[in-house]
Amino acid sequence: DAGITQSPRHKVTETGTPVTLRCHQTENHRYMYWYRQDPGHGLRLIHYSYGVKDTDKGEVSDGYSVSRSKTEDFLLTLESATSSQTSVYFCAISETATSTDTQYFGPGTRLTVL
Amino acid sequence: KQEVTQIPAALSVPEGENLVLNCSFTDSAIYNLQWFRQDPGKGLTSLLLIQSSQREQTSGRLNASLDKSSGRSTLYIAASQPGDSATYLCAVPAGANNLFFGTGTRLTVIP
Image (cartoon, rainbow over the protein chains, first blue to last red):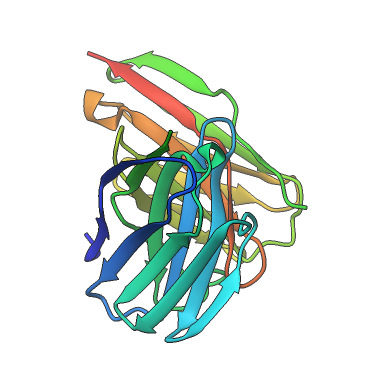
């Protein structure tokens, strides 16, 4: 299995509070991704990174920000959590761009916003 | 916008049966198609990646085919086992750095 860890694995928080999720990889892959998985919607891309300090928006980026200061770490921040952001969040990595390469996924973080 | 559909949403089969999972996509201009497996409460595991120039890929009891012209892919599982029970997802690239996922087929193999 690819060396990808996510922390925390579970979190319950209240509406309006900031939340940061962490993805850590030991594979030295260039690309990192954050997805959310919701029933009936499948997985949807939130943000991705194509290098240190290089990030871009995905399909459902509103309300989320990301940062990548080191190759191995990709942080996802919910500035002010809302109940609609209750979801399971997955981090993924790939060595090259998605159009040519497979992605490897972390174990996920289950976030509940009350 | 690319749409990826997987039908049926759920499937139950007795152990030992051969089965086919279906994936269809609306935009045939894809670079590749991937099949993933997801166990309950876990992340996704890549099973097979078929490049657009290929028609099929095999790994053990799994065989995936790709027909770009018809916008379809199938995942064939031979001699199913209870350990194959999981949700199977297909995904196609959307641009250079995004994947469009289907909502998956939940497979249950009954001993």
